Image (cartoon, rainbow, N blue to C red; front, side):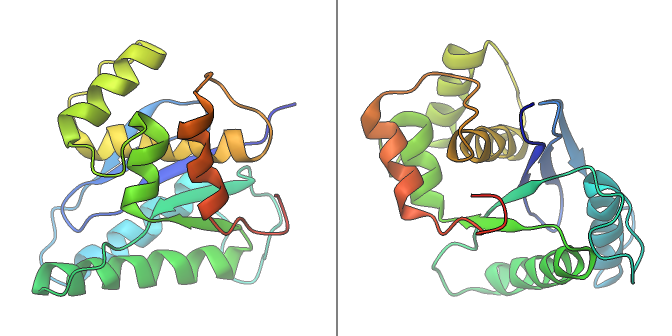
Length: 178
């Protein structure tokens, strides 16, 4: 049985999700400011199994969440993205779901073989490898994050060249599932 892996491309405006089935989705919020953080956290809680606080690891249906890490740049937008990461990571810890952080360059290398690939390159690579024609960049990244997690756990859904797969070695995978 393949592990249940979810990919998340966290964003304040539209978080990309690749459900454990591979179904693309996104999380948005109609609220403004910091209230969006609550909506994102609770939506991700539903994606990973809806475990309420105090039920660490029980009844979860996700084995691993793979998250694109915050890019190494300093700006106001990055500070806001850091807050999204904080609320999501703390919730994952709270409910006992292991997660891995993937630097953007490693995600791009896995998907395209180039660490400096563009968004269109990522989208085209996904289409060529899976047939999925996703228009939303956040969903594309989430799909690739899920595929990385499955590959790292020994259940690749697609075949990639060795050079692409070398990106997996740059990630610290949680011991609980790796």
